[in-house]
Amino acid sequence: MNGNTATTDQLAALRHSFDEAFAVPPQLREEGLEQLLLIRVAGEALALKTLQVTGLARIGRILPIPSRIPELLGITGIRGTLAPVFDLAALLGFHPGGAQPRWLALTCGETQIALAFDQIEGQIAVSRTSLYEHQASSAREHIKEVARMDHAVHAVADIPAIVEAIRRRAGLINSNKE
Image 1 (cartoon, rainbow, N blue to C red):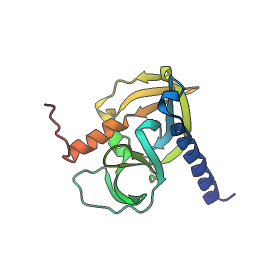
Image 2: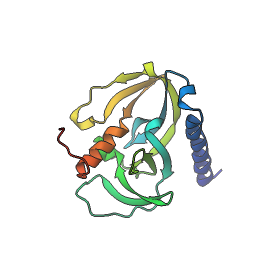
Image 3: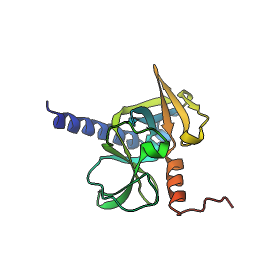
Image 4: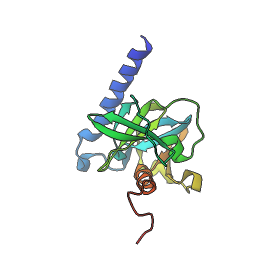
């Protein structure tokens, strides 16, 4: 099996697994479980809550645009619309891992934002009792929880907080609370 076939098969399996998480109406989902997408960002293990992401896509062509926001990589076309692409590692304060991002996590909300990351490792359902509050440092302010899974611990990125920070930096929302 060549690399392209393996990637295509992996992507199909992940799409199926991701779609299955939304196939059951929310009131019928098993209580107490959280679906997590396991990824790598700058070489570090990270988790995203699947309910905070609308989809995944392979990175295609990204058109660089001038911006005062250094984490903005540019814009790309996804599913017939344009979306700004941000470097998730830079937004989280991770040191570059050397690998170029290959994937995009698409955010929920009125304006879809694409967050670029390195690698998909899989998807897992964990008990909500396996999620622990994390005292975020200023460098890792968007990591508010960690998930304990078997013999591993993954930081859980807070996607709504990341989107709010992007919107605030772009001047789309007032940074002063009224």
